[in-house]
Image 1 (cartoon, rainbow, N blue to C red):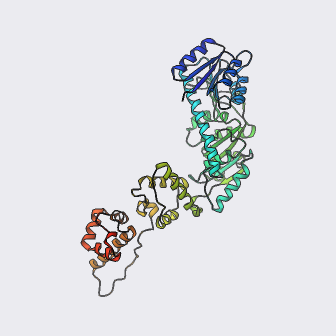
Image 2 (image 1 turned 90 degrees about the horizontal axis):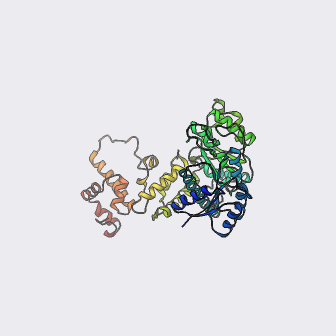
Image 3 (image 1 turned 45 degrees about the vertical axis):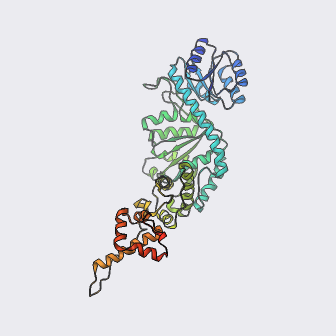
Length: 473
């Protein structure tokens, strides 16, 4: 579907240059030399993106942005200006701009911003749709659990979502801290804006400050234009600081200032920028211990820990494991288009007994792998990884009592082997492939043993029909 762009600039050279360049890129392009003309076009046509100058007669760019937000809220906008300052940029962002570019600019720079703007528009559209679906399907995003510990978490989310209080989510890796942050944000008054996540442990320390607070032109080599950081992008929304315990001491000081004064300084600037943002933080480390070890600021810890929410590890709420397994099975059945049967008791028991050091994320990844690799629509005990399947096999006594007269070793081992093979055939209902997997044998090896021991006749007689166990199976 053709994407339509409106360019607004009283500079005819810039207007004509951008119209030609973006039309060559396959966009439908309209032009306007002032704000009044632009508003008339937006009222008359479906415009996906507006690129506007700030300094224009009659109606300036900021006024145009505010009017666009009122008459066409789905239209996104980019601001051009030859007088770029952080204050101007923040004002434009408050008025609804996605981003801005300083004049003069290279066309490739504009192309990149346009590309990012349409990606953002698509994400915003998907987010609105997803949020609507999630609210219909689940009360709190994709969080599932009937255990009393999880019910307590749900009650906390419900109580704090409508406030602006800071929340600190703690829990081991894989317990769903970001899901809780999203549930809080998308059940709050700020839910019309995107949640802005930042993984403080994944971004190199040297880049994290500029990622959080942005920078001004000339702040460092390569800073050819001003850039809004995550805090600026989260204006009137929520920022999620994941793995906040990984922050350096110097950054902790700057985060503390934002929390105390709701303002920050972009890299390379000495002018504070005001921001209206709610902060949700998360960590998998014990911040109280980190404070005692002088690795985390005590004042920042108390600032963040206004509303603490602790997510229990999966091993502490094993009754939720079957719920999660069935949810993931259903999800991957649809996503991978695989007809997977419900798990039998032995497989479910093994999964419930596992301690799941990677928590819900580890469980989800395993179920996805099992669904993909299943050959017959069934998930068998032997399909589970050894670390999950431990303790579910045959128990062999630590000591065997040998009678004084001794015993026939080969005969005893042979009888035990017969019992193992017959048990595997019973479990697999005569299916040799499945029986071989249960015994961790090659199919040809198992078939040879069955033939040598005459177990095929034994099995068929037991089940009164040879049809239950045929060479073709």
